[in-house]
Image 1: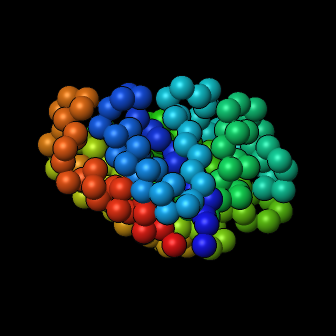
Image 2: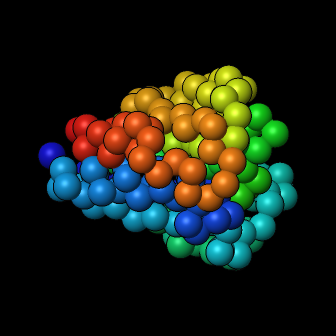
Length: 183
């Protein structure tokens, strides 16, 4: 069955190692017949959550702030799979991705809860210089439990200092296979 997949790419580098993982995942998913929409968060106008609890899930633009999240909300609301992609920054997801995830809370506020438990699935793609992904994976796993999304798994590509270092590594094949395996 065809799935709608949204990728939230939290890398600041359009041609970096995280983006290479995203490209491989996307190719696998599209080859399997899925529709993929990618948001390159670093090139978007996204503001941090104000913690105002003023969001309302039933609105087309559920947050009181009006910025590029208005493009992301309907895509996430209507998709089957959300892929979180990020370089490892201070043992966690990038600020770009964390900001978008914080703002998605507006889909849980007021009216219906359009984010949690709606049969969505998710995958995590990460690249890093080192190999210490434990804290990021712990956060991701906790987030999946909170959202009640099926955890499709993750591809963690360590040992990548410079842009392009992931080229030719098995993690690209793993990302492709993960994209292809979405069902």
